[in-house]
Length: 108
Image 1 (cartoon, rainbow, N blue to C red):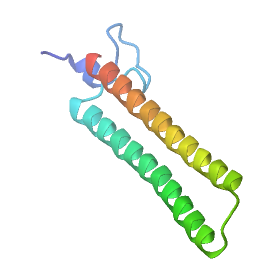
Image 2: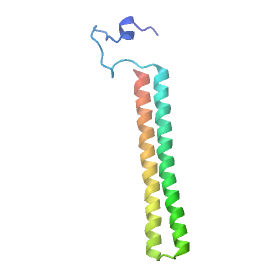
Image 3: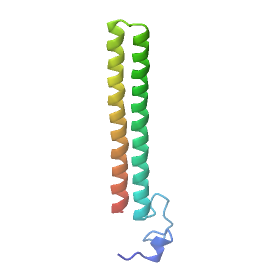
Image 4: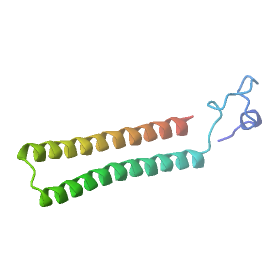
């Protein structure tokens, strides 16, 4: 694969200076961006999961000290499930966006 000096210098095929979004990225930089997205999505997942676990732990301790009505227990369990689904959706969106960006940058 040969790359002209104009492209390396940031000029397009017509001799005009390309914008930052048009300059070609190296494969290493694309892989680093993908790895960054994966680390970010892992952090998001861990944060939501930890929040859900802490909520369950706190609710369980509160329920042991003072038994709560069944409606409150059902409400909290539904909230835990909603947090888990939100976690999966947000993490999935971040991973899909990372894969899309990676594929787009590699094919350029």
